[in-house]
Every structure is written in C-alpha cells, then in structure tokens.
Image (tube, rainbow, N blue to C red; front, side):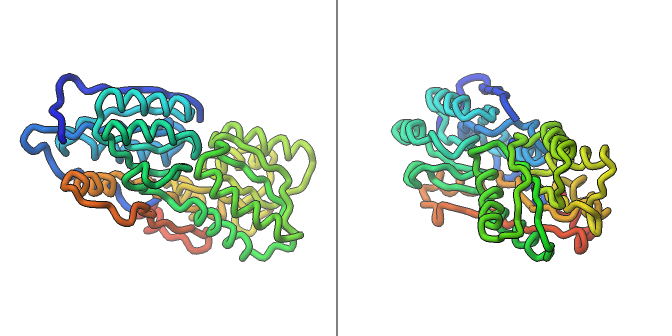
Length: 328
C-alpha cells in the first residue's frame, strides 16, 4: 500500500571507486495524485565515473520526482558491499520500491530476500545480477554479451592478417565487463592470429588506460588494435598514442574501439580518429516508471527481462544525424 511521505526526503550519498547510447531521455510523466508519493530507493554506481553514468543518473533524477508521484532517495557507490548496506538501509526506511544497478553480479541474494520479506519490490536496471528471478519484479538492462559480440564481429570483419590487441577492461566482475570481455576472449581462443598483447583493467578510467598503453609502448611490443570497454578508457589510450606519435583511426596504424556512445566519442568516429563505438543505452527511467505504474495496479510484469535496443557504429558509416540522435 502506498505510504504518505512523513518528513524530509532522505538522500544517501555514497561515492566510491571508478565504472558503461540511445534515444532521448523520457519526458517526465505522471503526477502526484491525492498527495500520496511512492517511496523509492535508487542505488546506482558513481554518477561521475563516465558520460554514460552521468546520463543514466540524470535520466533517473528527472523521472523520480515529487511532480511525478515519487519520494526518491539515491545512493551511489561502485563498491558492492556499500551498495548492499545502502539497500539494507532503504529497506529499513520503508521504501516501497528498490531500484538497483549492481556494482557486481554476485552477493545480492540475502538483501533481496530481506526486501521480499519486507514487501519491498525490487527492479533491476542497467546491469544483471546472479540471483533467482523470483527475487525481483523486472530487469531493464543492456545485453552486455551482445554488445561484446557485435563489437568482436565488427573487428573480425576488418580482415587483419594478425590481431595484436591491447584489451582495456572495466571494473572486473560487473556485467558490462563480463559481456564485453567474454566475446573477445572467445575470439582470441578460437583464432590463432588473435593475440592479447595485454589484458588489464583500467577501472573505466582514462588516466589508468593511458598508463597501461604507455607501458606497452615503452616495452616495444607491437600492437594494432585497442579494445577499450568504455569511451573514457579509449580516450586515455589515444592520449598515449598521440604522445608517442602513433597514428590511429581509419587507415592508420592502430584500430580504436570504445563503448557507450558519448557524443564526443562519436565525433571522434566521424572524424575517423576512432574506428568503432558500441552503444550502451542509459535511458531506462521511463521503462522503470511504466513498470511501477503496472505493479501499483496489481499487474504482473511479463516478460521480466526487458532488453534495451542498441547498435554499433563504424567510422566509415556514421553520420551527423547518428551523433545527434545517439550521442549521450
């Protein structure tokens, strides 16, 4: 049953650590009917970690407002244990809905069972978790495995005689990293001419990525592909290449691949400084809102898993309209 807002809204701010394009963010809809607000606790990753996360957080903040009928509290962390603690606090505070973008796929069973016992409905967004589907109402996510497969298929189609790859991974253990790494690992295992020069996490950070690529350059080992699991790491990698006067992009020495479709990254593709960017759609708030409204009416959500529509962009094909329509 809906609960009346009893005091000032609680805002939990927990910021820790460093983590992945789509249509325009949804306009706010709905409203405060009868003075009652739906109490929602939203757990997300650090909102400053990347352009994707900033867009994702802004989309949620624009949707879950008093004007749209919500009393929303937010918690931010890239650490799973801190997110779990935030979830437990939200449950104790009596939220009706717990919205979760998990830092890690594992470790959620206990707190989700606690939520279920307390009558709190859980909705996953952005990332999947390793938990039985009975513990949540719905999951609005990107298909990270498909993102990786789409990128690796594109790379395969480049027809290089030899693939010497610098692989810059995101934070190890989360769904984005697993999906984007998995497809590349499979290709390396199955193709004798695919070689990982280095495979190392840069924790979604441009600075860490630049340091890793610089270390490879300093070692003298040759490479012709940089597969970065987000745009920021690709940006850092390019900074190292520029410093060493190594050419990159279409028809150049090194192929540059990123993910997320930041507007500035798509512009790099359009300018042919990069080669590929994989889309990750951050605009999930309107779908979450629709699900909550259905649950409020007692409806069952089927199917539980809702996959965001996404694509990959090639520097030789991208248009100015693509940048306008898909950049975040």
